[in-house]
Image (tube, rainbow, N blue to C red; front, side):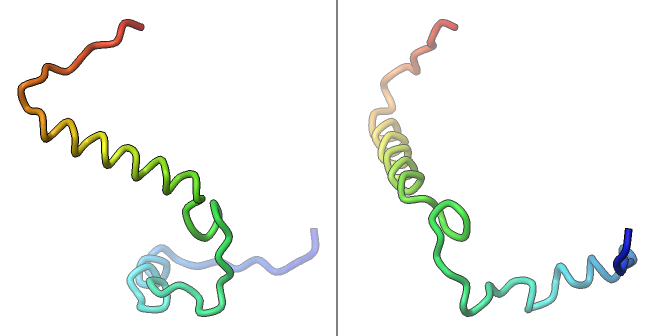
Length: 69
C-alpha cells in the first residue's frame, strides 16, 4: 500500500482534545439533519419525551405501570 502513515503519541492526542479548536465547530459546516445536527424527527421525539416526563412529575400519586414482556 502506498501512502503516508501519521503516528501520534497518546499525550499529544489528549492535549488536542482539550484545545479550543477541538471544541469549536467549523464556521462553514453545512446543517445536515441527522449528520451535523439532530434530525427533525429526533427533535420531535425529544420534545414528546420531555412532555411525558414533565406530566409524570406533575402526578406524583400514580404508580408506575410495569409492562409484561
